[in-house]
Every structure is written in structure tokens, then in C-alpha cells.
Length: 351
Image (cartoon, rainbow, N blue to C red):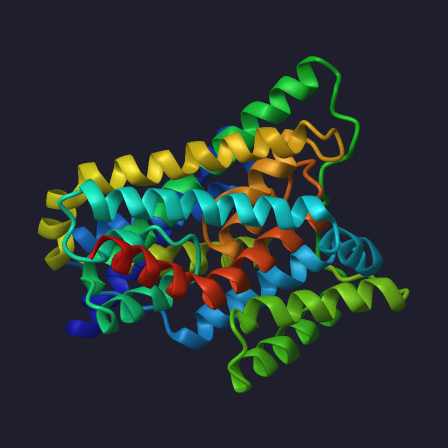
């Protein structure tokens, strides 16, 4: 009976994701599956439907997403973007904005202890809750704030990107073609893509590389695209399935028993997250003023969401994928390296 109930819940979740994705497609294009899956999974979680995505499936979904993104990159351009001072500036501004918001939360908000400092760090959501608990924060509230930020960024990111692209098209200002993400099965390119995803995923998980299931296939794919004259092709249905798994993984982090603390802290969390998004948007405007990158590229590069989610949102837009990937990856490692130190400094300065 339990197996039948679980199967029905999965069927309902899949059906809801398909319908909502279809309805969102005209509005947010490529990211519609990701947003729909996340929203439906959150509803299921708050209805006390107990579903779980196996870590191996999530890792493979991340690997396929990384491989699909790699097909739009070129290694030399990616390395050039990584050495661009604007990338470093964007990362510094994003982390600086998060630090300012964290300081204000610890100083003035009703959130307990050091929760605000840890919850505002822009990245590595899966480990910040545990780190906060070890350092006197409320791990549950930190995790909620981290995943709520990812949700809001994933929802607003496609809307902003869609609005910018529409404005560019209306003024005939869009000079770069959108990334080619809608692909059919290729008898050569698709097996290559799946092979890169499997090998990269295994390496990333086996050697416990930070975000390795996503970043290693992305790196391997970028090298392949650069040096091998065989295309990497991830069919659209397979990429959509990967987006769905990523969305469900995020949405199922929310549980019914966490609804009460979430509601109690929601106004403070929302205010902090919106402030962070606006500060990052201001940083994007400052970076785009250099005219080396577009505002859309700078906005996606500085957005404080999960690296997989933001880069997935960037697919299908005319953003500079090399710049976005370089910025998001550098920010991820920077947050892991200096984020805990910053959170402790904030706590001690006000303690």
C-alpha cells in the first residue's frame, strides 16, 4: 500500500511539473522546467508528502546540466573570462553585499544568534546549515534561508532575463545569438555527452570535489568541445529531465514541520534576500557600465543563487556563458574558503 501511495505521489508530482512547465514556457523559456519542478516539490513537501530524490540521481542531473552548458563554452574563452578583472570585481561585490546584509541581520534582526550571518552567505547552501550549527547558529533557519534564497533567485532570474531579452529584441540591440540548448538526439554527440557526464560525475563524487558532479563534467566537456571535432549534444528531453530532478531536489528540502519556523522568520528572511538581490543587481549595473559585458550577463554572473541553477537559467539566453560560469564558479569557491571566516568575524564584532 505504501509503495502504491508513493508511486501515485510521484505521478502527481511529475504531472504537476509538466503542466506548470508548459504554462511557464512562454514566460521564462528554458528555466520553466526547473521552476515548475521546484514549485511543485515545495507544495508536495508542505502537504507532508514524503518523497526523496536519491543523491546519485541528483548528481547525474547536475552532471548532464554541466555537460549541456559545456557544449556552449570554449576553453580558451572560459580561461580568458576567468582572468578578467570584472569577474573578480563581481565576486567581490556579491560577497561584500552578502556580508553587509549579514551584519545588519545579526545587529538588528530577531533571528537568533549568528543565524543571519550564515544565512546570508551566497552559496554552498547544502553545507552552511551544518557550519552554522557548529558555530552557534540555528542550522535549521540557516538552511531555510539558504534554500529560500535559491528559490527566489531561480524564480526571479528567468523573469529578469526574459524581460531584458524582450527589451533587446524590441530595440534590435541583441547582437549575440542565444545559446543553442534545444537539441535532438545525435547518434554520435549524445553518447559522447552521456559518457562525459558519467565519467565527470564519478570523478567529482569519488574524490569529493566541491560541486564536483556539476563542475567536473563541465570542465571535461569544455575541453572536449575545444580539442575534439565531435559535438557534445544533450537532447532537450534529457536536459529537461535533469532540470526537473534539480528542481525537485531543491523543493523537497522544505518540509511541513519546518513551516512554522519559516513563517515566523519569513518577513526578515524575505527582506534580507530581496536586499541582497537588489545589491547584486546594482553590482551588475556597475559592471555592465564598463560596456565589456551586457547587463544580462553581469546580472546572472552576480546573482546569489546556486551555481547549477543560475547557469541553467542562463542557458537559452544571449548571456556570455563563459563569463557567467567563471563568475559563479569563482564565487562558489570563494564563499567556501572565506565565508565561514566572514560569518565568524561578523559574530565576534557584534558579540
